[in-house]
Image 1 (cartoon, rainbow, N blue to C red):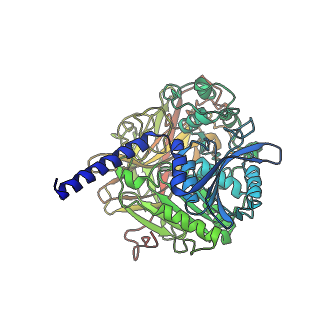
Image 2: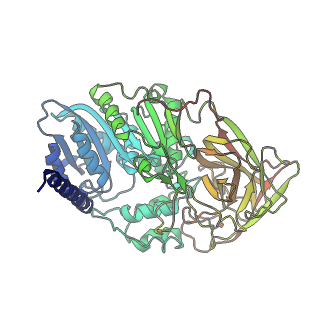
Image 3: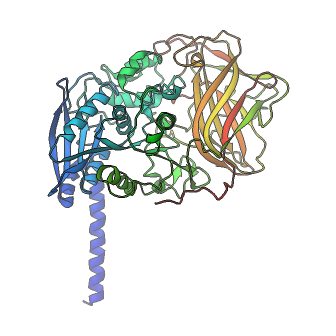
Length: 621
């Protein structure tokens, strides 16, 4: 046999073997692979760490350490409610940092899996338990006394809960998609990201609590639940118990009013907190709790300027926790995504190497804010949020009184109409406007898509008011928070208003940009709920999250207004009562006034194109 042919046979055999190994790896659970990976990377794993809290409750942990380390190590600390022995992110961080010379402690939170406690509510005890664990780490002979924290979603929120303590060993953190840590900071009242403008984010909250919210469960959660068929349940209080019976923290969240001081016992970040831990903060435009992330980071800048110098914020395209994946996915909802890659793993090591080891420059060249502009396919940077170069632009609502649906007469314009007019729609909680894209999660319906998606099928409904601009003469780049000021009335003592900004292409496709909601009883703040007087006019300020988005010339800007987005948001039953334990809804005739003395508009932060010298990020990648 000729040598060249032999080599070809060997190469083909190796390729087939590599493919078989890849397929095998994909099918073998990550926790089964961990011992083999530990051998390959020379990492020691101890699954039997037990740390006793001051009240006597033992918390279970897994400790990863590089074998043969001959000096004290910096430590990465990861906490989670998802089972430290099996959760992919926890397993991955344990091995990644251990093979890069760190000790890593991964810990089940109180009340979950092998940790003690039987009254789990997120995030009760999180600050004190975290601080006690840092005391323990710093006292170990293998520790250099410096600890960093990392993780996404719940794993990120627990970092902020710990940062409230400003523990001397907590040297740095990397919270990702962690805006659910915001409590009453900057008027958010988000609490686990479960609330938006006082409206319960039903699908995501019910989906999470159904799997993970049992107060006394220490075992695995069910992989499948009939959420799609259950979310319509009334009263809302019964949604979770229908699919997962047992005492559940879901009920605590629904039954505790947003102004109740008991929220302070759950260790969410409040306006009084002053976290000073150096932070590399990462989030995405599609994250349901993005507003909480920005509220916390801006509070740090507002209250602790010295700490703000050690805080960097990165906002990527994608849905919840997709920042590392989005470059490979290549799409965010219906939008293509290019140039989204960032060297996240390199950044993580550089960040912790500086703060925990004293090596390198700690990403000193990274800007205070780095953000991806959707539709423009590029990263820009700024010193604050919104960017100092941005300017506020208001687009005013107008119509001849018939803005119902996209074929109505609603318009958006840069000047308000002289004459006052009104549009009205009948909101029926039993026939709510369906959610389409946006920060949507956990519906149990595989056909539901998150992120920017076409809204045309909901914009034909009479209970959706549609206001559309003329075609844009020049590109419009939005970079900052959105809000809608609406002059409204209702026949009900309480109702909701949902505002959605939309990009309309010349072919008619209508892609949602960002959205928000407000429960009318909270128009003066969650601490001062008050009913509406039927027929009386009120001015509402509806927060609509932040975004960086480019509308090309020829596109049109659109604002949709309605009173529901189901199942993303809990339906307001319009009674003015507690809502969560009610089953008999009422219809509401809701009106939007505009023009003359009724100033209704949507407000954007506009960043002109091109920016002088194009302030695109050109630092280390």
